[in-house]
Image (cartoon, rainbow, N blue to C red; front, side):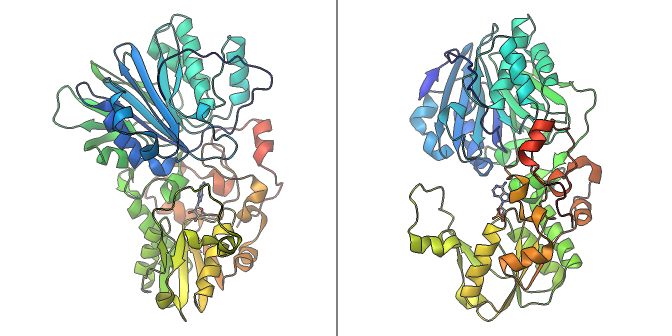
Length: 492
Ligand code: AMP
């Protein structure tokens, strides 16, 4: 649906609940007069598809007027040439939303659009706020109505509320960000300009790029550098934790809006979530993942005939493991890269064969072999168990599992979709018990120290709460109780 902006009509009622807040989505923004911003945003989102497959949306501004299009599904399903042509303008933002259960509804697709006395505002959010209960109460007191059940709309409404008091876009945005606690990397479009913002910890990534050789400069904002590469934009720098960049016809201005920025980039972005060809902190994530594979081999060598990686996320670490150990790297599992979400349930027989819809083991490679299988993480343990069974059914003689991160013992409240603590196998079982449950000869995880040392950065500049329970942004009691179920999770 293409719709010009229409103001919120749905009134808050007591039954109105926040669904699951936004998860690790993808955000994009562009300020580029004379360029086809809708098309460039489309390709930016296309590169960020791995960050969210549930819904996608683009909002553009032409003068005072906003144009939006959002839909459920993949970027390529939501947009076509004709829908993109109906998104004119020189400023655009876009969003891909992560798939979560319970909140799969078009009303929650982003960008969130709200009306303000200065005109409409569109906002795309990656991360989770942790103070949504308090913030919602404040907004209701100020007379806000909600169109969606997301924390992202709350940020947009908080800015709109500040604008109502007579503030400029910048002043209003900065006041609103002071009301938000948790993780937020944002792209915000107004008729006047484009904003890129990170929370004081910079938990989720956000980078700035420029479209080269054009004067005045055209700026691009994106969750990851892979979205700059796809449109030929050059990486300029990261938006810093606690920074707001404001891009208008005058160029780009920077505001450090937080008194106490302290970088705590999510280490899970580095290990798993972000694309390996994206660059964070100077180097490609592919290189980081090779290094953690090498470190893993130093920490937990085992003699075997071959090392295989679980496609795609386990492959760089498996290659690193092979390089360090001298054990041959081989492809043992082939992934069907065209498997997306299907709403057709497999047959009972197919269900029993489990993982093979997506991954198929290679019998001639694996039969009779002692295999080291490397993956990036174990969360609930279901995936590994199915893959190990598939390897054994194919004739692997021994299966040794190596994980290029420590055990996940704590849920994430800042935007990675992890279960309640009691569903996290690393929180309830010892390494020996997990090995037995997933059916391997041996299992070893990367140490927490090894994971941080391999970043070649200050170890204090990362959030690793999912491995330690040390949450850098304090959590309200009620929120803690919602997911932190165990008094004594297992710590290895
Ligand atoms: P499981 O142990 O069955 O929960 O699955 C773990 C696998 O899922 C690992 O191979 C990861 O590559 C992948 N994974 C880890 N975290 C997530 C996440 N938040 N969302 C989707 N997949 C994930």
